[in-house]
Image 1 (tube, rainbow, N blue to C red):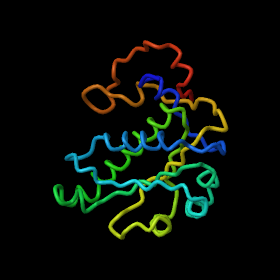
Image 2: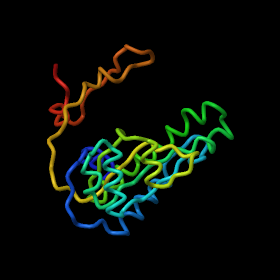
Image 3: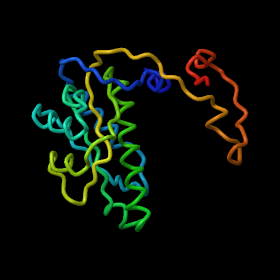
Image 4: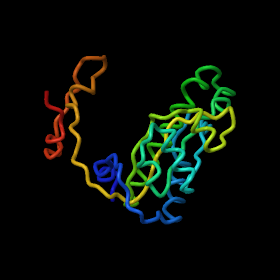
Length: 193
């Protein structure tokens, strides 16, 4: 699957088959995470791979009882490492860049999973302290996102998207970017008031 097809194919999936995810695919996702860009190439994040059913059940409880977290064969927990970024960038590194690094890494993981025929969904609603305790993260690590991954057991419909003119500006904010569609099939995904 080429990059643009991968992006189009990625959807938030909250129902997973019981089929395990092959270790080779988990390895490829982690290799892709390692290639993600980061501020100063510091990679101010860590990823915890969770497969243990009891730990995934606890993570699901930590995530406001979102049971699909436990149902996915694999759950990746993305942790920001503020001190790693602050050494070079000070306060901005510890408050922003490490968060950006972590979310970029999670985004790369989502696209890698999709390219490998897997599904995922971004989970951001959770008790940070409880998640940190569940995965035994050190105090200087901050859980930012959870990414349950597995083979999809559902095929959701496309979600509408806003018009390009509403999200892209040219030179200054609010000055619409002159955009014309090259792929007319995308128009059906646009948000319509």
